[in-house]
Length: 165
Figure 1 (tube, rainbow, N blue to C red):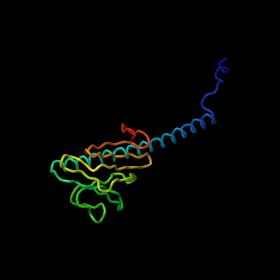
Figure 2 (cartoon, rainbow, N blue to C red):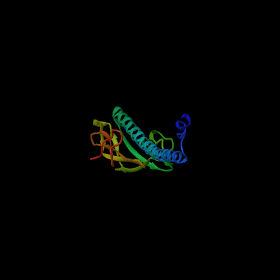
Figure 3 (tube, rainbow, N blue to C red):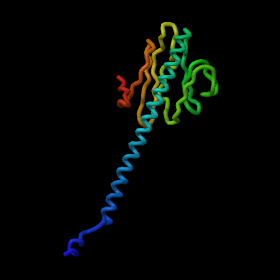
Figure 4 (cartoon, rainbow, N blue to C red):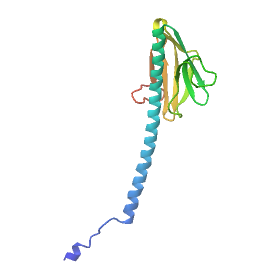
């Protein structure tokens, strides 16, 4: 009788192993795509917040020193935004403030108008917007004439950044 009980299958068949390997492959490829999209979204959010902090420092400096701080942008090898005297050779070191993104895949999609800036008297600003983009989407930094700055997302809300109206 013992022989009849032990005749049950032990281990996995080749078909079962192939199904498990295929399932792991599908889940792995979906996970990799999601991870890459997550990284691109985080890079865009980090760069947008760094630009907001940079412009807040420029605005605070203009208000503290009661002077105008006009912004400029350059598209040499990589893009940059600065305040002060614009260098003739792109985004090199210069006197004044300079913002250059950490990640090369972040692009400066829009910069409008060209004469944006902050004015120390009454802490006002020339209104406009700066749009950053990559494969995860587009984030716009909006500057109002009262000097307020905010971030909004153009396509879908991203990481606590609301949609643009």
